[in-house]
Structure formats: C-alpha cells, structure tokens
Image (cartoon, rainbow over all chains, first blue to last red; front, top):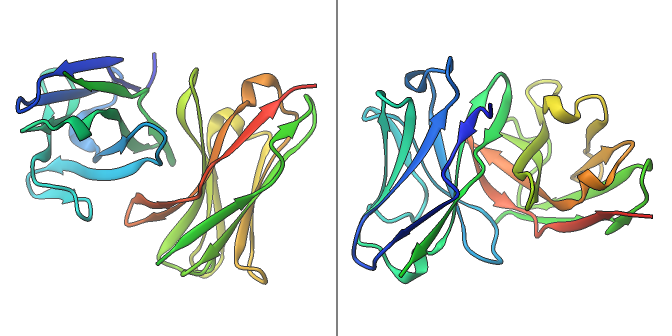
Length: 115
Length: 120
C-alpha cells in the first residue's frame, strides 16, 4: 500500500469548490505530519501551493491566493486541499507530499478538470 | 532570482549510468539554508523524489529507498552545481528528471526538466 494515496481525478464547475484528499497509509498518523501540496499545470513545472499541519502550523506559498487552503480529516487519516471559487486556470494536477522516514514521498496526484 | 540549468544526455542504454548536472545561479550549492534535490516524473510512477545533498558544516545526502543502492548525488563547489548519477538503469528509469531547490521544507525552484529515455 502506498504511503500516500490520492484519487486519480476530480471534476468541478467554475465557481464551485474542490476538495482533494491525500490519505496516509494505515499506521502513519496524519496528525504527526505536515502535508505539502503542489500544483502542476499542463506542460509546466510543479508549483508549491501550501503546507498544513494544524491551524497554528501552516504556510501559504508565495503568491498563492487565499482561496487555496489546507486542512485535515482525522477520521479518514487524510490531508485535504480545498480550492474555492474554481477558475478554469485551476485545471491541473495536484500532488501531496510528506517528509517520511528521512525521504520525501509524493502522492500519485489528482487531475482536476474544471468544466 | 535563483535559476537551475540542467544538462546531460537524453538517451542512456540499459545497464549503463545516467548522469545529469544542475548548474545553480542566484544561490550557492554550499548554502546552509537549502538542500538540492533530484526528482523524476513518469506517467507510471508520478513524481518520485530520488535524493538530495546539503551542507550543514559538512555535506549530507539523503536517498530514496527505491534507488539507494544505485544513486549518487554530489555537490561541485568549484562550479556551483550538483550532479546525479544513477547506475544500472533499466527502461523503468525512463522519466523526466528535475533538479530542485528545497528551502524551508518546500521546493521553490526547479530546473527545466530533462527527458531521459533508457533504451538500446
């Protein structure tokens, strides 16, 4: 079982909200980790969006709008990325990552379609 | 402004060594505030972190378990760059390879990417 699991795809309408999940493998407690989120638009380099561990330990990436936010769902052991007010330019792949056992681990990514 | 410029061959034969270099401008490979990493991306494996080198009074390396027996990342202070060597490559190592700067636990600057194909 992978360390981080993300749904392959997600679709939402312009102006709506999108909720991305990043589920940690059983036995790896989401409360312990900072969850990092990256966006990769087609043909572009990954871009750091934000990190979230708790409301007192979070960071927004440089120039990243406040409509991008992080959270956690302890009941499902998942980190969450929330995008409100979806725009067509938000269509991209979104990756989560954690620093685990002295290595960076990325999730498989979720492709967001805005339609 | 930090810039990372990658160089190296785009085609490597199976069982040979993949070698890439990442030249740094706007920062120092010896900075004690950052780390310098290699990350690859393929349709089958997504984003995969390979390893990093960093200086904190001495040089350190961290490597992904999946490639630990085959990888070397070296700094070159004389030319302000760092390199990746991946030995005994197979077609599964075919990917776009990126160098990247890790600052404050996130990757803020990336190289342009190099598509490396492993094929005879």
